[in-house]
Structure formats: structure tokens, C-alpha cells
Length: 316
Image (tube, rainbow, N blue to C red):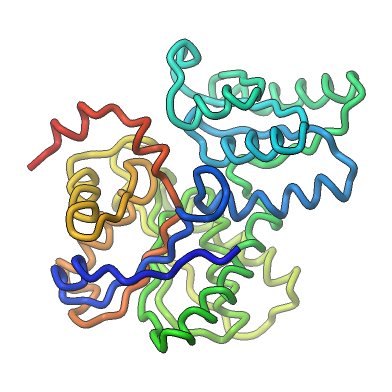
């Protein structure tokens, strides 16, 4: 399921660089995004184990929870979701949450410190009812999720060979860290040299970088890779006030990408990462003429769920 690799002529001219976007937001499943690519491995795992229910966790606008719910519905499986968010959010669902409810997922909203207990209770309840549930880690943070992006690097290499275009930089939004880890180790596997920068959307360092490093080590051991290792760059300068909190700079980046190339970003993930690209170019860290690949991990539904007041108030 190959996603497009597209040049952004407007932004390339604006910044004096050569910018391409890997369009995983167009991954061929409802809503797309990196979680849609990852869920395929989990569904195969569930099929192999004879499962008939999926259980996972995330925020109320979790792309991962959305694709889990949609895949469960497509197979006639039960789906139970433990989400964290504001009290009363189920009274006015929108975006990803609305989709989860539309396809019949059973949603429980708890505080972050109640997630583990709730997941355990739900798993026991499903087993007692005669189901065989697969519990998927939040964000698909596991070896299965990371392997999807090791494979995605081979897909990218084929596209770059076709275009005879090879990036100096690869920049992406990094949340749970497995997408970034998969890309890093996938590049190692191919012996492909480029600067990979994960832009944190929530976690601070040193913990954020440590989590990506841990995922890389697990992948290398699984794949038997013992050669040269790429440095992990996990940057937290653009976290702002935290997860799902976007300031004026993020909204300015979203508007710029939309206006110059019709590229749709979101305030939770890709907008933050794109604001980092803007700063790295303006500071000279990314030099004029550089070939830059932005890996679009999705987010249209997150954008549509955002309060439009925030977007208009932050207009410069």
C-alpha cells in the first residue's frame, strides 16, 4: 500500500530548498496516517491468534484508537477503547472520537492514571464473555508498530530511485517514538545516510530520546543488525504547552503549508513538526538548496476537530 512522494513547489520556492512530502496522510484506509500503516501488523497478529476483539488506549482524538475501531468494525469484532481527555467529552463528540462511536466502539474516558487498571478490567471482562481480545499498546508502541516503518523505508527508497532524488534531511512528528525508530533502523538496514529528526509533540528529553533509543535497540536485535548505528535526534523545542496544545507559531505553519501548496497539517502532530522545519530553515540549520523530506504522519481529522477560534485568534 504505497503512499505518494510529492514535491511541494510553493514551499520549496518560498524557502529556497527542495521539499518533498511522504504522504502517509493518504494511506488507503479511512483517515490515513502512520497509525493506519501500523495497524495492519496488529490485525495480522490478531488473525493469527484467533482474536475477535481489539482493545487499546489513547487520547480522545487518538488516530491510533480511530484506526483500531475502524478495523475492528470492518471485521465484525468487538472494540473497547480506554481514552483520556476532558470530562463530558462524550456528550459532544467530534473528529476521531465521533468516528470511533459511529462504528460502535465501546469508549471509556478516564484520567491518565486510571488507564492501566481499566485496560486490565476490560481484558478480563471480554475473556469472561467468551472473546479472545488483543490488547494493543497505545499509539502502536511496540515491535509490530515499529516494523511497519522499517518496511516503509524500503518503499521510500524505491520512490527516490524512480525520481533520482535523495534527501539530506528527513523530518517527522514523533509521539510514542516507534515511527521514528522504524525509520532510523530501516535506514540503517539499507545503509542509507541522511539526517533524521523527530520533532516531539509531547514528551520532553531526556526521556523522549531514551524511548526512541529503546525502540531502536529492540528492532536491531529482532532484525540482527549489528553494524553502524545512526544517531537518534529527538527534539523537544517545539512541544509548547504539551500534547494537543498548539500556539500561534504552529497555526502560522499550518496556514503557510495550506496556502502555498494545499498541504493540510494539524495542530497536534504535523503542524508542530512543520513549525520546526520553519525554524530550522530560518536559523540556517537547514541550508538553502537542501533536499528535505517531510514525513506526513496524518492529522486531517485532528485539524477538523480543533476549535476554529484558536486558529483565527492566532492569525498574524
